[in-house]
Structure formats: structure tokens, C-alpha cells
Figure 1: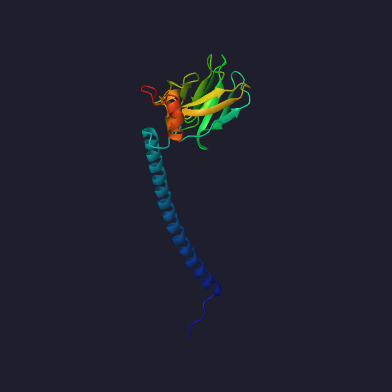
Figure 2: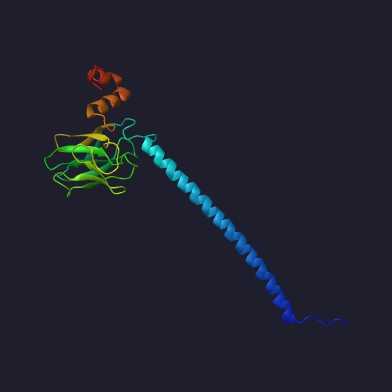
Length: 207
């Protein structure tokens, strides 16, 4: 006659089996997690490399592509003051600045290196500077030209004018290396060819 198994022994056996199953599950989960982690890292890293390449190559949307009606960006702009706005599109970050001599200038605030945001630092130098904190890029506040760091091209211009009441308006854009007149004429040709003709934009050497 077989003696009945002790309750403690049965409980220990059950716990042992549960423990083994738990260890197997954790091991499998850990392996899956590691694999998923490595896959995610590889995907993100690849995306960053591809993203950096297309930005550097100028494949992505350029500031100034497309046209828009004039936009009032400030009622008044004091010397040394800057105002941020979006123009010509809602994703085109831009800035208007009044320099210390009263000149009003406008630029895209998307760095020409890797598209980081450009900041205004009025305390730097005699005229202030436009600065990209991502990779220490610096641009002239007066011309938008690169003065330090890795950016390969000047900042695209946003053409700004002041009305009789002192309000500042954005009226057009110029791509990096393009003159304001060429940028305005390009926009007029796209939006109003008749007005472009009247403005002399189709004349030889006008672009």
C-alpha cells in the first residue's frame, strides 16, 4: 500500500514547477526585449543618418517655396528687438529684426546645417548675431552670411518692409544665396505673371 504524499512535498513541487516556468518566461521576454531594443536602435539610427543626409543635400522643403500674401509681423519693432513668425507657410519659421541703426531685416530661422532652430542674440557684437545652438553655427544679423561653425550656406531671406505707421510686414522670400529682388520676382511669376511683367521681373537680368 502506497503512503499518501505529504502536503508540503506537493506544494514544494508545484512551486518548483511555477518557478521554472517563470524563469523560462522571463528569459524569453528578456531575449525579445533585447532584440526589440536593438531593432529600434538600428531603425532610429538609420533614420537619423538618412534624415541628416537629405537635409544636407537640400532634398527637403526649402524655406520660401510657395507664395503667400503680405503678413503683418509686428505693429512696432524697437532697435535691437526681434519678432518670430511663420512665413510664407505655417511651418516656415522666420524672424524679423531691427538692427541698432534702424535697418529691418528678416530671415528664415531654420539653420542651413541640419535644420535646427536659429536664435537671436542681440548682446553679441555690435549688431547682434543669429546663433544655432545645435552645432555652434553663427550667422551675420545684417546679411545672413555664415560667420562661424558648420552651416554650408547663408540663411534664406524673408523680405520685410515697414509701412507709414511703423508696422513691419513680410512680403516675400529669397532662398539662400538669392537676392531679395530675385526672390520677389520668383514669387510674382508664380502668383501673378501680369504683375511680374509690370514690375520688370521678366526683363533680362531682372532675376
